[in-house]
Every structure is written in structure tokens, then in C-alpha cells.
Image (tube, rainbow, N blue to C red):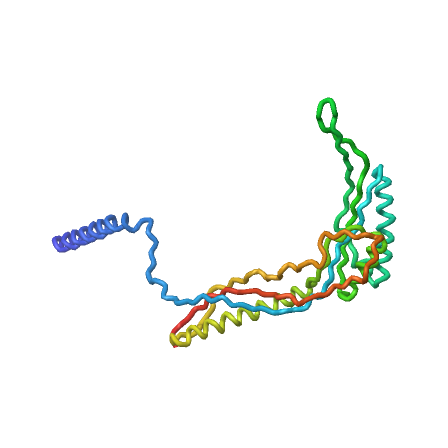
Length: 259
């Protein structure tokens, strides 16, 4: 019995040593390695969907103002304020409310003259007055008022017109964005289905969606940087709007499988 017990104990010891040696041999090779038991077999198709529409602008934008110059800053500011008040009153007579008028730029700046010293040939500058520039912007949904607003403003003292253009209001832009994004994704799905049909595959899921920016082309101004002559006799100003092309796109990666 004692001999048998010793034999069993010796066998267990040999097995323990063998297993430990095996672990020590394998462990160094396993360190620092990422184990991927099963490679990914997921099949996908990437498609870009497009959506475009044409829409009439619903917002009129007019930027204009008054530039004055006097010997002192106070005189220039007072003169500018009187003319601008007259202009605002004239604009309101066309049906534009005060909430549709905002100041976009206001500047007071010194006016210099350069003189050359005949003895030294050096040029020097001296302040000969001050200028004031006050630019306001009218944003309104009354598109038909463009001509009357411009004419009344010019006749009341405006001597600077920066731009006149039509655009889309923020609520209209948001509605168009939602509609076009949905159509772009539907277009991507339709294109993917057409491509998969001859391959005997079908869409079984969505892996990734990327929405591109909403593209609105910058409108071309009807006027830009124009100067108006108050004394000039002019016919009523014709201003017309035109449809704008709006577009967006969406990239969708679909998970696909065989039929």
C-alpha cells in the first residue's frame, strides 16, 4: 500500500511540473496580442443620396445708409442723425415696421488731408474733419416693397446703397432642410436597392449615416456698392426675385445580405 501511494504521488508531481512548464512556454508568446476569435463577415454598401428643389425667396434684404462729413465729430453725428431719422420715417411710409429695420454698421472716423513740405519733401497729415457712416438693413417678407423702399430712402437722403437681394427666411430654411434630408436618405436607399438587385442581395440594416451641409447659394445682389444722387431724377426702381436652387446630400452605409 505504501508503495502504491508513493507511486501515485510521484505521478501527480510529474503532471503538475509538466503543466507548469507548458504554461511558461506558451505565456510569453501570448503577451501583448489581441485575440480575434472570429473575423467579421459583415457585408456593406456605401451610397450617397441627393435631393434638390427650387423655391421662391420669401425675404427681402436691403442695406443702405448715410455718410456725412463735418469739421467736428459732433457736427457730423448731428447731421447724420437728422438725415437718418428722415430716411427711417420715409421707409415706414412704405409699410415697413420698425422691427424690420436694424443697424448693421455705425462708424465715426477722422478725415485727414496730406501735405508735402516743400523744403524737406516729407508728407504730413492733419485732421480736417470727421465722418460718420450709418448703415441700416431692412429685412421684410414684403417682397413687392423693394422698389418703393429704395426710392423713398434715396429721395430722403440716402447716399449709399450696399446691397439689395432676396433670400430665404430662417423658418423656411429649416422646413426645407428637414424635407430635403428625408428625401436624400430615401434616394440613397433607392440607389442601393437598384445596385443590389442584379447581385441578388438586399438591405438588412444600416451601419452609418452622414448628413452633409444644407447648400443655399449666396444670392446675387440686385445692387452692390451703389451710390445714389439725391438730385438725380429717376424712374421707379424695378427689382425682381427669382427661384433659388437648394440641395443637400446624405451618405448611408447599408448592411447587406443575400436573398
